[in-house]
Length: 109
Image (cartoon, rainbow, N blue to C red; front, side, top):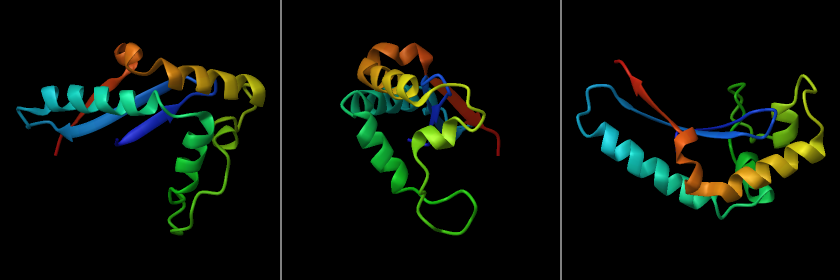
């Protein structure tokens, strides 16, 4: 999975990037997104938090990410932590039934 986006409301979006010129991109991307959504449907909030903890910081230091998912997403205090946790958990469980919310992005190189 290229990117998993999480909104302050706990909504989830998968983004898979492929080369614009790739003629098989559409089928491959749709299949990959369905596979990723199916995998995420088995995750808990804690599983997602652990996966984030294994990622590298965006500041270029190469250090592992230390902030919680809630801290990363709620910088402006738009939601409380309990509601955020509940919404992310509910959206993870929805899995492939929410395929219509996933985006396919083409890169122009």
